[in-house]
Image (cartoon, rainbow, N blue to C red; front, top):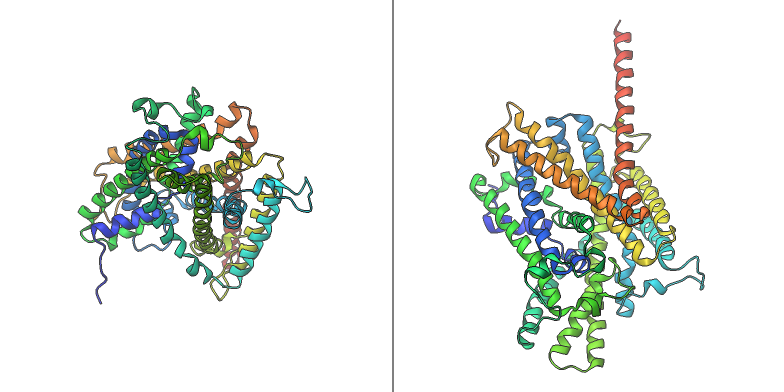
Length: 508
């Protein structure tokens, strides 16, 4: 039976669901207000669209290869470069697991209490076991539990929790429709006044005002919001008339996503007065989404004359619903991502590359030994960050910075490899967007430099403000894991040399 090909709309939807993340909107509004919008546009032009075309060319040329991004880099540059880049891509998920394991208690708190009160939690009234430290201990127990169930091959829970993904789409529609209804009910008045160019240039967050390096460091948030596009590289061959359809789909999806982010940030301002709602010290990057969503329900009630008691009831009720949806979505992602990226990198490389029994895949398809090593690394990182003596606000700043930097650095390996890929001879070029070597060089280096400068600003900015801890943790992921990848591969090269010498001697 002939495989059904993807049409333009199907492809746009697939790209949209791979890239668009609702959580990026309330976080961006909290960090910059309306001034976040231009940076999403800049990141879309300098990173998202050109990088998506590179990924599409790689995916089309190496469509017979099973190794994904490892195969692209290995054939374009070399196996060591490919391994380090792919290993850093994998470890970005390790950082994500550290973040989610620690942050998942915020939606739990919202489901139970209708608000985030994790900052007040303590075990037996102990100061030592309270706040971020208690969340860290709970995160360790949670992650061991997830690893245990996944190592038993029980991954079916993720199918149940996939309902969260559909529900998040419903939340987006509710926010768009509800915001427009509120604007009409208030006769066009926004809770946070929009002053045109001034609002797009001056951040609402006082910490960002008059601080160009802090503003430039925000680019990493915008770049992170476009992450996931590498997943569509393998869709070129599954597309109808790919030469015409794929570029159209990328540009259309990019426009939809950029406009979607910009419109939703604007709509968040329509029902969220920045200083009134987000000015408190208890607002963190971990709970800001839930604060804004509960405020959405309260503002909706207020727009139609509800009493203060009804507004509070609506806020708590909607916070519970939204938190439950996010909890299901995060749990589903966690059950899958604990083993999926690890299995992918082990499957795509030589078993001898990995120390000890780490490279073994069990009969049920689970890399159990590697999963428990991963569990130990995640747990140690959680404890180191959570027992660092930070406020809850700083705790979530560090976690978010680690993930943003960790997840965008690996893209530099792909974009930097692209000009070298373009020079290769005997490669299937049936799908091409960059017609010349000059255009491939230009956009390859533009994307690489955009990612490099954004990450440099994101890493050094906290240190310039005296926050050396965030700088250290932002840098630690790429440096430690990059070095680990280099050591693992160098050790493998030496082992191969010894083997080849031994085989020569035995023949002699």
